[in-house]
Image (cartoon, rainbow, N blue to C red; front, side, top):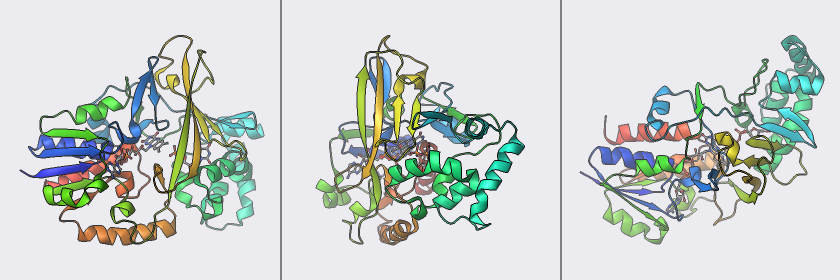
Length: 371
Ligand code: FAD
Ligand code: UDP
């Protein structure tokens, strides 16, 4: 039996630790924050599960992952349908017939498609090479200007011309009256919050967990003391930024408790103009259909900001320049493969959703235990 050290008590680290312990291995989990669960951490405030690090909606088309996560929590039937507020005008998301109708007065899918075709003619048939061209190609110039450009440039701190097209392809575009933000077969929010999932994953006699511990304070000793290390922090930090810094996007969350029942009538409202400094406001109780103390609500404004060392690195910025640098770090990581596995959003520098993190961790488990 091997001795494992898992660095980071987020979803990747917890899934790995759970599976390793299930196979009889001893696992120590260290986490530098003062709580487990990484960015999916939720906590109870006035009977409302507050998503401390931004709105988290579980969605997947991977049946195995859905069944897996359902072992650790019961999910409600929440369907994400954010709305966009552009200078006081409200539009449905993702881009669908409700959006097109409000914007252009079109009624039928043919009319909507004709409008999009007319507007995308500015591209003169060019294959989209960046986020701006991809957006115009998908939904035309009006939606690009009102619902995409301002939001995206705030979110990423880059011009849409410098961002990869894949980011906007995360969102469905539909010629139906359907406001479901995702196309996945399964979707929901764990009743009672996300933290319990990680708590249950880590509840095993073979697992010990310590929070408030930074791996880098004792990196070399840990490498001597453990057979294997699963590292879910930033890969460039692990190598002491030897090849330069990877780029991340950070966020500041401003949470407020209000003495009212219902602030905005929806869990997520995006502010898509360039001037409003935050990207979205979430009202947590609507993830659980208004559950919580009467006359109380909790809202969080999300402000994107430039990442500097010491800030939380919420998003990798996967443009070609950063991906090329990551590849160089990957080469260094391969040389340490006997000792260290790099996993998760930061360890693999990938814009992973929760289901992809679980799936990646389960693949790592299979490889590690040669199953
Ligand atoms: P993390 O949760 O970041 O865990 C890594 C952990 O390692 C952290 O707790 C960190 O403190 C710790 N750590 C780092 N360095 C060290 C160190 N040196 N020593 C000790 N500990 C260390 N996904 C969805 O599927 N649906 C959504 O709706 C969704 N919304 C999101 C909204 C926001 C604002 C963000 C930022 C992400 C969202 N995600 C969503 C993605 C989701 O959060 C991630 O896929 C998932 O949490 C990643 O898990 P992880 O274990 O890789 O990383
Ligand atoms: N986006 C946008 N307008 C919106 C919502 C999203 O332009 O109202 C773009 C933006 O570039 C964002 C991307 O679509 O980064 C992906 O959105 P998603 O909701 O998946 O982002 P996340 O929840 O991961 O921050």
